[in-house]
Image (cartoon, rainbow, N blue to C red):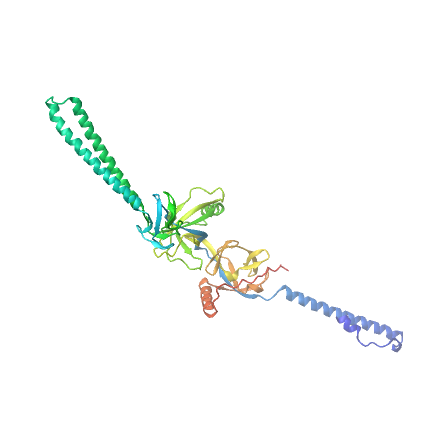
Length: 430
């Protein structure tokens, strides 16, 4: 640039130059000017280089990491299922006279659901009762005949054959009476089966057969499903199970005593079901088709809020991560190669550190890999950092950060969905 300025200066025309001696003096003067300009340029470049090698230190706020015990929750998609669902079937043949209940209504144990035409069964009962009366009369005759034969046989006035026949007739009549009694009981049962009742309290299903239809024994009419307790089934994959077993072996995960987990449900409207459940069953083997094994939790459902067939989010609580590392979400950035944070090293310079994040814990990330207790992570001012940037760190506590978050939440407009985290790519070291 200096050469450019010099080139455009007004120089005397050749024709106006003095004699040869003056020309030599002019050339020497011109050389001296070029030298001065070059030396001045070198000094300026040296000053700029020196200022670039020692940039100003950046003020940042840092959090010193501490290992802590952090709850480890497991989430799954679950499906509700009645703890007892009974198919209501006809136990006799006949015409379906009436549907007594309303489809989908709550029913009580012993409540009448259907009526089958009872007239044929009433007639069968009457016939059985009449047959019983007849057999009782025959028994009475046989008993009286035996009483007459016994004294005569004792006096040899009646043969032994007559006595044996009388005894046999009395026993046969007694057996006929018992058979007639059984037929009466069967007729009474059939008459009772004509009134179809619910064997349990619960919610009823849709009637599958219309009134006036001829039904046969074992025809399904509807179902009744118990609502309390309500079961929730969910599946755990083989990979998940193996990963958690390995974490427990390494001491990175700890289950509650006797594996008494609390199970929480989140419904489709994101409301949390008020009652916690307990795991009551875990299948002993994997499903070869899906590579998962079934787990079941049981929930009290007295108000009937849960219904069979609902999809829910299952959160299993009770496990903990001992000596876990938590970092505020604001400190974790997303770059081209994944998540990273800025760490202040022993030279008070910014150090790029790739991390593997786990789950959210409140406003923090659970860090799976990349950080150790005692390190200082930049929690404010990291957007302007580059590798090896000198920093002036002001250490803050986790309590201070939580208080600041609470104050910020109180002054900001609540949002149903958090804004996406700005993406920052790690700068390349110069």
